[in-house]
Length: 202
Image (cartoon, rainbow, N blue to C red; front, top):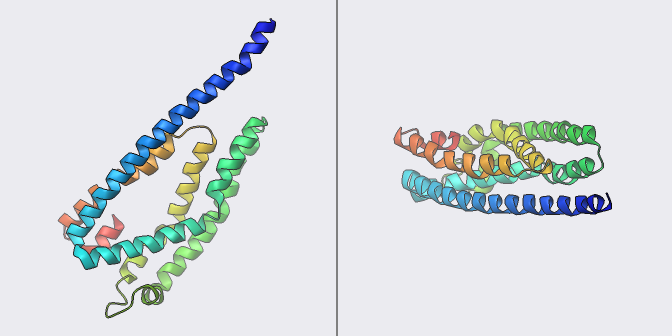
């Protein structure tokens, strides 16, 4: 009986270490895949939109990425911190409640910032781009703005899955699924002659 009591914590530690090792290995695979797909996307964009068009495209994506990070309001880090804590304390209900509580302000602020990105696209474009084509970012902001709440919320949701003890959804969707689809959809947009707006939408 005593031996069984002493073996249980040791077995739990081994299980935790095994899960940590699997999660770390999966994360490395996902990061490599993300890097490869990102490189492929860069090739497709530069080939399809040429040097100037690609530069404008990546500027638009840079602004959108910054806006996405800002509108997450730190909720992506918060769910990774608090969900495991609540689970360790046996407060499963509180762990589940973390997700809607974290999402509500992200969606609200994301909607406001996305609307501002759309409405003030000309002003923002002129702030970022100097020279003859100061309005080059306007069509990109009009396409990307409405997707800002979704982008921010989806990142928080994926981080929440990590808080529940698995890396699989995050790696499968963020690193492999989305990253893998982007160059494929960009190829379709370029091949169909949809131009910069079509590439941004893809």
